[in-house]
Length: 372
Image (cartoon, rainbow, N blue to C red; front, side, top):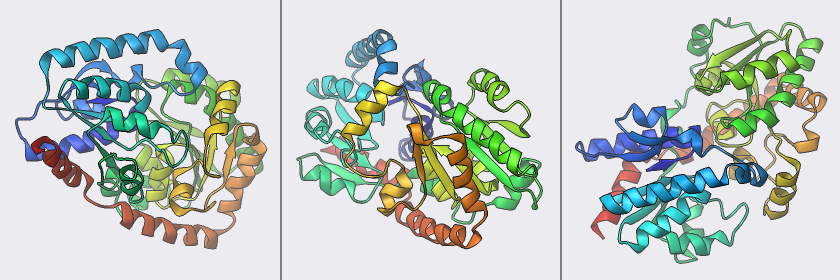
């Protein structure tokens, strides 16, 4: 298995639960993070070696990443596992999967690359590289199968892991927040490059919100190992902000908050499953942004908006993500409880659609693939 970042580590950990229930003697190894390790996964490299986003950023780490992939391919081809499961990280995993598939190793990709959002021509590469795609969203298998790629909708494991009823009171108690506190959660991403570009405008927006409304409280979950990146940014952009840095605990933060300012990515779906109003944002190196925006097919970048086919929540990206604009968008939610309630109803319906007991569904699909 290969999972290339914190969200992939989370998804892979949940999948490992299902596979170990079906095959108690299962052994799993490759590239992963702490949640996979907690399930007995043997990580030959840590997942954060691959946690780089943006074309320019990837170029800086290209030689190291390619070197890891070559070493991993050599090791897997020598040991011949029953299956390889690439968890997201398509730019790393698809080339590796193609090598393994060509040598008779079943290659499964968990989390279908979003050919419906951008870079649709990748579907030819996917067909060449994998035996099967395990899809998180219900509309995806038909798109893949139209291009000759076998695919199965297995639901989203986060929809199983996150309770339908939000544990708001318990989460606030765990975070030493009172029922009357008005709480803003800041989620600047899980990659080093994301934090460098996204955290400054989020922290500056929080400082602006506090200037206008001093009673607000702020929480920021930090991915394990990245606190040393966040602390200097906090001192630079929001030194006087009443902000609690949390070691992980993003789910408690989302359950407890009244609104979240969140980097585009898996965290936006987590926020939706917690039925939280949000403002989606993103910022990256300028050249990477110019390349990315020319390749997208849809008007949305945030998963909740894509899945609802609507600008259900605001998206403030790149130059539009000014502290003042982010603060105002967050205030718009805090000042309109009826809109928050209506959004929560839509998110609850989405939650039910994605709740498919993914670990079991994916394991059944993998079992069929291995038997084919």
